Image (cartoon, rainbow, N blue to C red; front, side, top):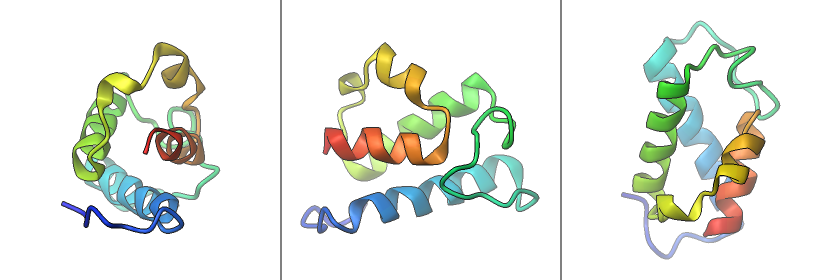
Length: 90
């Protein structure tokens, strides 16, 4: 688990790095993952992989998964979208 006293300035970068590691677990190292990478179109994440990814992120960073609304989920098209939305929940 990450340190509870983690600086919020570092939080988005930490989330982004975690997302990259998790996607590499799902898909291997065959993708070049950037903040602007499209989750489904470029990285071929299935909806099940997206839910697993969000669950893992919320667990890792102590975010209440119920705070993520359907509207938030619909906005999560890119890696940076996840980072931005979860940063707003922290």
